[in-house]
Image (cartoon, rainbow, N blue to C red):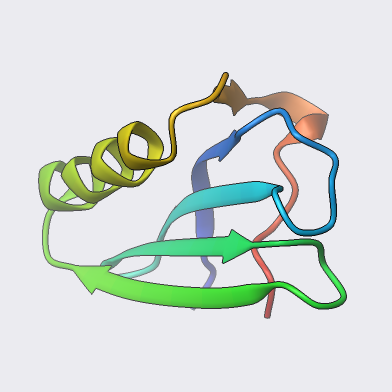
Length: 83
């Protein structure tokens, strides 16, 4: 089954310790993946939801809790979440 990338957010910070990324994907269920830090040393957390609304509620909480200048990434900038 193919996972569809629906959305991606980034806090706009390049720093290895302060960078934050969030992905929203859908297979059968909705998947939210969040990474704190860079792709080599960052901590990755994952959640699954039955509905898109539940998944987007968590994304709003993650983005608001971290503050900063979060922006949604689209098109080529919307890379796949970490495996």
